[in-house]
Image (cartoon, rainbow, N blue to C red; front, side, top):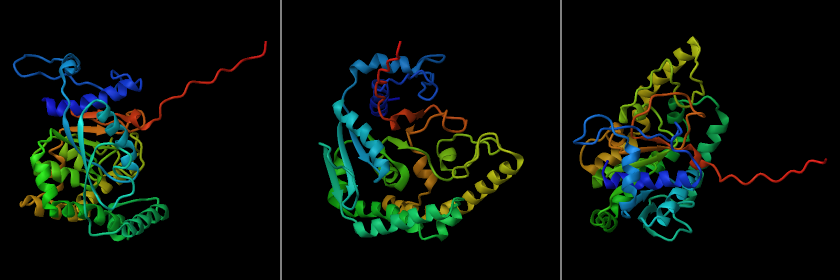
Length: 322
């Protein structure tokens, strides 16, 4: 793994250590690999720890997602700034909290929608979540909540309509893109600039994680997202799991249609969702194996579930009467 890939991952690992996490724990693991020119496996963690003293500050492009996604990502951004890395955040001019109260470079571009439009579509999305417990991608397509995702997928086109901003991104020589993949724009930017991408996410909808990361997910053992099954499914639940997967194969391409159209227009070539996800260099999952179902993982997947937790406060002293 070269320096541009490592400096971001190294900062996140340091944050976990600062919070008291044990990186030998299975949820934050290091995978043995074989460096070029060496026979047999060699512990990646040892290489990184030995090289950490020679690490240089990097230049990182940050493409976040608004709302609750940003609150978690912001803690990592603050830590990267403390470590001396140079960060540039790009965001739409219509947002709730993006980029506020942080002392670093923020580049803004205009959008075709207003804050009222964003509030209205998000309200429709939330209302539909409360009405229906059993979710499906067909329901998402047919309900009014789909309008919220259309706004998210369309704003990236506004970014690339700002030629001055695009020229700045081209000339800035970033080392990597640190992104939340929920609205797809960060993935499009990474592919456009041909930069390594570090994905910061809780999970990926549909089957694109398994295909993009080439990570197996046997349907008889790994439940699909949104179903709420455990890894010990009954025969009926396994049948439902297979049917849900077939529904994903049929409808997910329609769900992301706007995103792929925007990406194809920007990149001037036909683009699929798989093309965007498969370029990911490092997956940082805000999850933990004890809170999720068992599943195979790839060497470039790192679980950082503890990053969502507040720092523990000391337990108050309790005195017992004699």
